[in-house]
Length: 140
Image 1 (cartoon, rainbow, N blue to C red):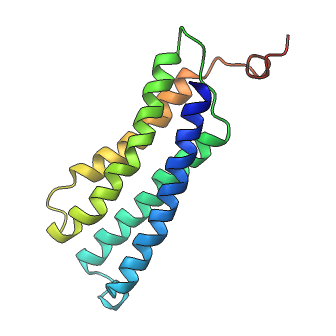
Image 2 (image 1 turned 60 degrees about the vertical axis):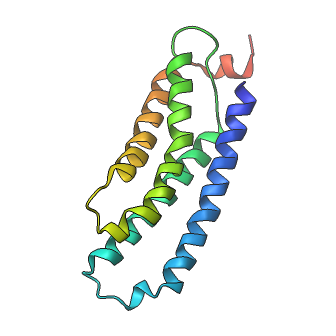
């Protein structure tokens, strides 16, 4: 299970970074840089674009040194945190396409994506806080 969750974080992070570049090209294609700087539509697209980068980098960073505690204290919190971090970019990607045309009247998807990544990382850190390097390397 450990290697699977780490691999999932890696692929979600890489996929989200590719999607970040794609949304950047979409914004360029839509000529958002021609809009006034104080345009609400431009700001909404750009903020959702940066949230995608955030979600991808969080998953990529966690995948680099993913450690899941063995059964017991913290393992459920760490797995819950991992699930929240993996789902966060999905909410952020949906928010990129749905919320800006509505001029931000509803920001539920963005809130779920950003707080999902923050809380997921918090739960993951709390779940793995007592793990020592010797436990990870299985050195006795």
